[in-house]
Image (cartoon, rainbow, N blue to C red; front, side, top):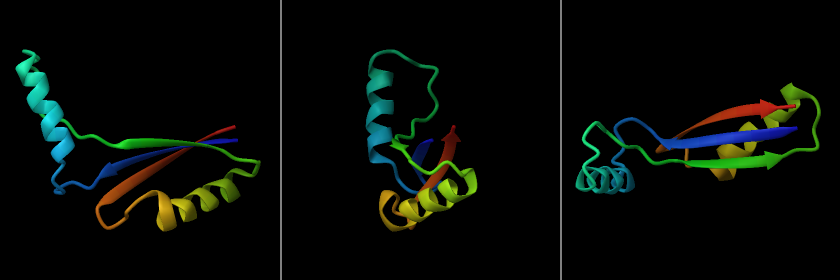
Length: 80
């Protein structure tokens, strides 16, 4: 089973990297971009085959290591 974890800054948390990308896009004349938020994606190959157990395990990984839950949100997608 594969787990895809998308991590992004919570709303209201300043995203300086996103601001830099937005500024660069403006400089390149991409005028239709209103805002940019930069996050990260982690792909895990799991040996667990039970979806509920896999989700619980990945949530524990996110809470203890993969995401800083004070300032970041995460979303988990499981693929069989």
